[in-house]
Image 1 (cartoon, rainbow, N blue to C red):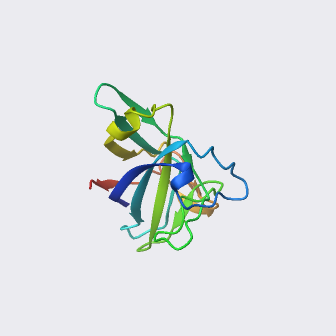
Image 2 (cartoon, helix red, strand yellow):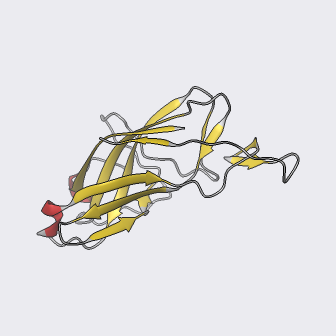
Length: 160
């Protein structure tokens, strides 16, 4: 698995041209988000899925905080990439050799109007909590002969 962070920026929801998914609530226009433009590639020879383990750490120069809260299923009319990570039970499925370009919209809680201009991304990460076995559909993997089933998974995150 290869995850490339192409660029990012901070912006208020009211200034972002996006449409939330049908199962998502439209955030207040003053809500602040970090928008990360990423490419996720399956560089291996087998099928894989990607769950919701994305995280960022942001600083305003005096303190830092981490966040994993992001908007799923949103679309961006007239923009490329034109979607966020999907809200699929079990994760995003990627066959061998495939890739997807996405925005990941991280919510930035309570930055304050002055602090918003000082925010800097310290790191962007992905953490897979559980992984292994044969793909069973809907992002799920099963192991035919537990406990002998161990899947070797490498994640490469390329910084801006």
